[in-house]
Length: 493
Image (cartoon, rainbow, N blue to C red; front, side, top):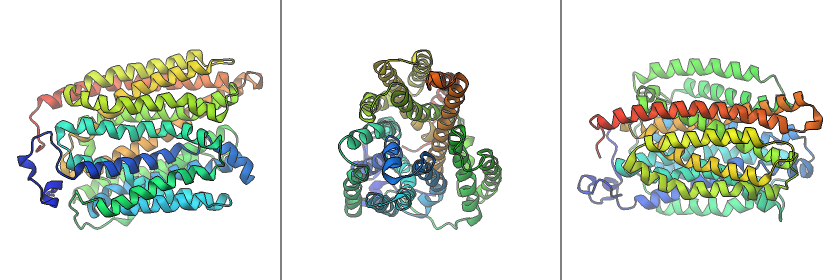
C-alpha cells in the first residue's frame, strides 16, 4: 500500500524536497487537534475515580454499582481499540476523528444531563466508544506525517496524553468536586470536546490513504469476547477482593483468554491474505516486541498506583478528595513538562540512555513506597515519591512508544498503533487488579485495627517486583535498539 503524505494530499511541496526534519504544511494543525482531543478523552478515563464517593451518596447506589462507571468505560475501550487497525485502513483520519469526537461529545452531554445511574452509565459507554479510537488515530497520524528524525519530539508531546492525562484526572476531579456537584465534571469537559470537534470538522484534512478491505465479522466478535472478557475479569478481581464481584472473576478471565487464543490464530491466518483485523506480524519486529513488553510493565505500575495511592491517602491518612488531587498534581505536571524534552533527547540519543535510567528510577520509587507507606505516614512523602515516579515515567513513555512504532513497515502503522493501545489498556487493568488484590489480601490478613496500611505495603512490594522486571526489559530493549540503529534503515524518510 502506497501511503500519500500530507504534502501530496494538500498540493504542498513534495516531501522528498523537504528537509528530513521539517514538517509538511498543515501537519501541526492536524497533530494539534488530535493531541488536544486525545488528552480530553484520556483525562475522562480517570476523572471519575475521586467522584465515586459522591455518586454513591447522590444516586443512592452501592460502591460495587458505582465502580461500573469506570469498569464499563474501560470495557468499551477494550472492545473498540482492537478494531481500529482495520478502521484506520478503511476510513480517513478526518472521517474517524469526526465520528469518534462526535460520539465522545454526545456521551459527555448525556452524562452531564443524567438524573440517575442508568443514563450516566449510558453516557460513559457512548463516551468510551469514541475515546477508544483517539490514541491509535493520533499515533498513526504521527507515523504518516512526521519524519523519523523528529518522531521522538512529537511522541514526547503524545506522552503528555498517555501518562499525564490519567494522572491529572484525580486532581481535576477533586478541584471540581470541592466547589461543584459531579455533573460539572462533564460540563467542564464538554466545551473543550465540542470546540475540538468543530475545529476538526472545518480544518482537519486527510493524511492517509484508504483501501477497500472487507471486515471479518467473526474476528470482531472474537475480539470483543476476548478483550472484553479479560478486562471484565481483571476489573472483577478487585471487586471480588472486597466481596462485591457479581461473578467469579476467573470465569470471564478464562473465557476471554480462550477467545483470545482463537482470535490470534485467526489473525495469523488472515494476515497471509492481508485481511487481518489486527495484524500481529508487528511482533516479528524485535524492537516492537521488546518495547511493548516494557510498556505493559510500566502501565501496570502507573495505573495500579493511580488506584491504590488515593485510597491510602483518603482512607488511611484522612486526606480530603481535593487535597488528594493536589498532592497528585505535581507528578502529572512534571511529566507534562519533561515529556517533550525527553522526546528531543530521544531523537539525539535513542532509547538506551533514557529507558534504563527511567526504569531504575521507577523501581526505586516503588521500593520507597513499599518501605514508607504505613499507618501515620506522611502525605508529603507520598507526594514526593509520586512525583519521582512521574519523572521516571517521563523517561520511559516517549522512548517506548517511539521505539515500538518507528521500526514497523508503513503498511503496519495502523495495526501497530492499535496493538500498542490495546496492550497498554489491558496492562493498566491488570496492574489495577493486581495492586488492589494485594492491598485487600494484606489488609485482611493484618486485621481491621491496622487499616489498609499493611495492604498498601504488600501492593507496593508487588509493584516493586513488576518495576524490577521492567528494568531487565529496558536493558534488553537497549541492546535490540542498538542493533536496529546500526543496521541500514528500511524506511523512506
